[in-house]
Length: 421
Image (cartoon, rainbow, N blue to C red):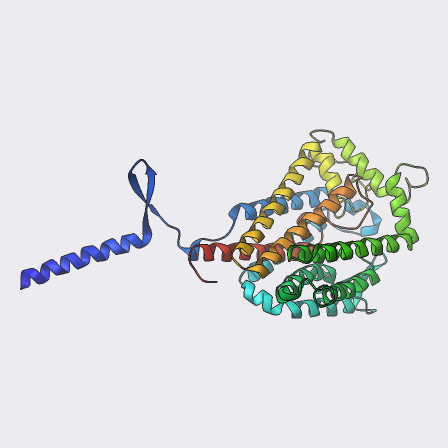
């Protein structure tokens, strides 16, 4: 009896050890009929797309260096008063630190919670867009009332509006899936919401932000499966509206004319000044550039070299090679984020997928517009280069949006490994 009990205990221990190993080791065929054990990665520690994260970090680091390079001569300009050569570098570094902290917090929020708060986030963005227009509340810079003071930094509500419209439009399309073929029940309410945001943005004025918001909303409507005829009808209305806004505004018309001939006597010292000096900077860079720090145009010739026209300084200092490298990084990042969105939709997570694809549209479209302006392919428009240009609130919201994308990817991988979100 004792021998039988002892044998049973040894068999139980052996089977227990085998099952314990089987939980961590899976047999994988490596060639022929031979099988080799390999360790599976637990879903809890699977993480997210690290390559995407490192591409984002590379763009942020490159942007930090270029903001310092483009702004190092600013103390010589009386417009900025007595500031240190590292003034804009330190402000940009502080924005990156704040952005990383907020992005880390945003990553902890599940997509289910983002879906629940989407309408309220949209309402908050509307309230802030109204607040910035109130005298003595909104901060006026260069004639535009776009900022709110938060003490440690000035915040631009239009940047929050881009993210809020993105999340709200994604949630809206999920709720309206059953009536997406009906114009008045599916599209018109969303159009009204975007129109409200657009009116508030144009009152600042900030037509560039309105363009990005409109494209994000249109992209999500299209990806959400809105009828093609309705989509092209809305697109036609938007294009017509932008054409009317440009035609009815003398200074916007001047920008278009300056874009067509920036080096003419009439425009070279006026609306075409920035574009002409941007093209001179890029032309000086040739193939390999003049070297980091060697830009001449940033020495008070090219206005806003550290914000809207950072790409021109990159082109001058790193040449065609630098510009092409930057384009490849943005194209790869946009495609990768789109892939994460498609993966989520394939897992029947429509809201998460639309949010990720909306971020891809946001980053890709804004980078395309900024690069097009710097290269003279598009009329001048005040949009920064995502992740790179100087601007605290833009960096903050870019990082929050990308943190949400990484959260989508994390939840995708968790589900594919049999875990629960």
